[in-house]
Length: 338
Image (cartoon, rainbow, N blue to C red; front, side, top):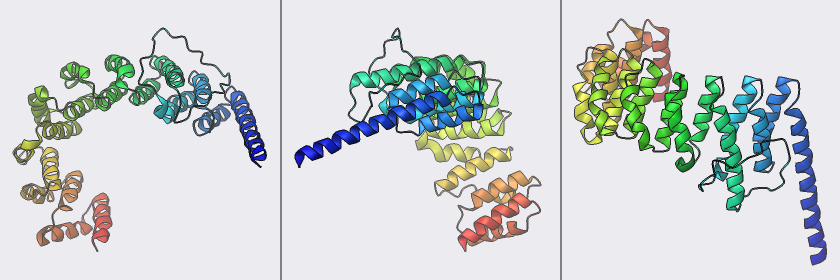
């Protein structure tokens, strides 16, 4: 009986190996098809297949150099699927990695060896480092985003280098990746990035300063919260300030309730309300009378946190607001309360 069991197990292993080889060969052909749609589908199949990770990563390496932008994006972004195998160990920068369509049969499992992890990590890094110099900014941004899934010890230098990229979206992703990896080394770049001409860069720099609790930038964020030309940047700066000084959050936010800029005043009221502090009621009630529907909508979102009868009555009155978006918000949330 034991002999039969062994035979069955060996047969199952052989069948599985044959299926892996067949699937890899099919995808190997599809990944170099003349039809972009076929190549896109192949990348999707590779990412979600049960192929050995090293085999899959080699195939993604081929797709990452494709002429079709979407194929490249799918391949680069898909590397994240294998992040659980990325090694903490140091990767030799001069290590030659063959990124090809050759089928590698060494399957990685949760019990994989360190050397196998290093092999997979090396291939992935090679693909991503090539993507960091892609002519398309979205590919470079995708590559930076994926790098944040690697240990900081091996991806940190690449992330920091992209803070000088010419594309705003790449710099934004580099700041977010640096925050995810807790890279204090990026802090020295924040001073210039908070003054950057690109709104999305200033917003990302403020987020980074807040997430990293960089006290040295508190005054700069304070100025940004009051004077930046972008409403989004002003609100993000305010959020960053209370992350840096959480013990003073109430006092900081109350200082902004009287701001002439109603967007920042309402943001302060919202952040207070989320912490069960209703000091911003006067500001919110006043904003409901604004001629700007965007301001009324922002005020309505704060009203949801107030549980007194007056606030509920004012919220119900928005069911008859002149603006369709405000009415829609009121109807949706009024039903939720009933």
